[in-house]
Image (cartoon, rainbow, N blue to C red):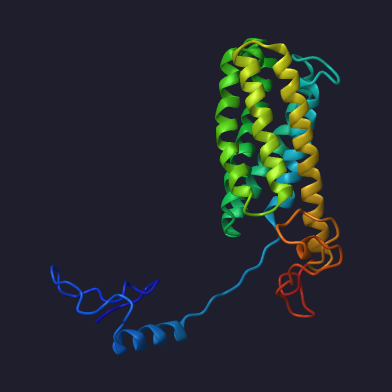
Length: 266
């Protein structure tokens, strides 16, 4: 007896080991077709909609990236004391909150969000902990200015390049966030490893642009969800209609009235 716990097995596969298929793969037997349709008719999909995890993830990412990048670009402060002041917010908002968004992205079946929020959430946790260790004398003062620290950015640049390529399948907003982030990480990697101050400054400026794109994208996603799937700020989708303000891009699955969970929102 053939069972179908998941997808339909290849048609024409023989049940006897070593015996070739008795018919072309494109022609399932009547018994196979009937069994599959019976299994399909008994299957049920239970929907548990959640808010887009990247809304929180991008806000956490953009906030932490802007604060640190503006310091790297020498807009304010210094490279030794100022990062210690930023560390607590970076740890919780850019680190824990973004990492949680990455884990919720598993539930949303969003591979790009899972990888990118997971990667950058973990990075900001590590960055913040490193700053606190420096402040407490557990690491040298120049730890985050050393060549070894540049290798952190190499890993981030390579990972984020793949995120940028994958984001091309979504919209221009996410691609800009990831593309600028990958470019800024590469500049910082080259600047720290090669001890080139100008590249570190340039990397800071590019990361500021990435943070701005992240804020815009998160805001556009939140507004769209808050207005019942209607586009308020265009995300740069790859269709003209998908960028028209007022166009309903998605429709929430909900009962017209009910408690949160049965109806979108609180």
